[in-house]
Length: 228
Image 1: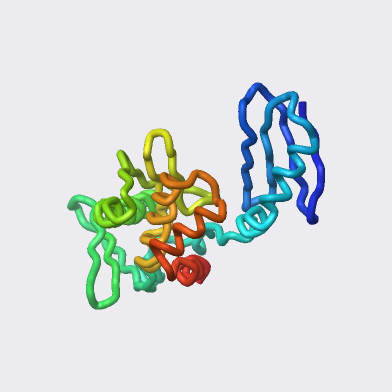
Image 2: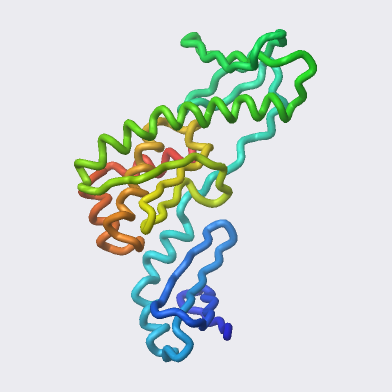
């Protein structure tokens, strides 16, 4: 059974189902807030549960979300983002394995096969982004595990439209958004720490933010970098 109510200007969609606990989810991409709850739970308890979490709901709805970069044709002269810098792209064809060559002089070279179209060039650069992240993420996890006294069993990198990262608490698996390879390294560390804190506190509760302040006092400044 489904119903909706509005509180503090926010519409909450409630679904009653065969569950034991109240579960709150916020979807910043389209402004939706949903609650799933036991079938016989009273409306009064649902309302009180929601009222207690209004500050968090508002904050999470405003949380900066990943934005797709301007569409590229992946041709020489375009600018691409790498670890917070804007680098000039140079594309050249050769009958050799496809490869991305990063230069300290401020450029990225894509070696492609003759006739490679835009999608193949895009896929090549994205594979390089993924490799960059997979090189950095294990180092961050290893650094933070003893400091936080948690363990991550597995991590992965994938494209995500509405989240910078996710954490499967049961499996202790962390997923990181591919777009973070374009952001400043401080942003990646912020997201890794953020997801690892969920291993200590599932919800974005007051305790969660106290833990963020404890482990990464400048996390708010890092969060702002995500939208620059």
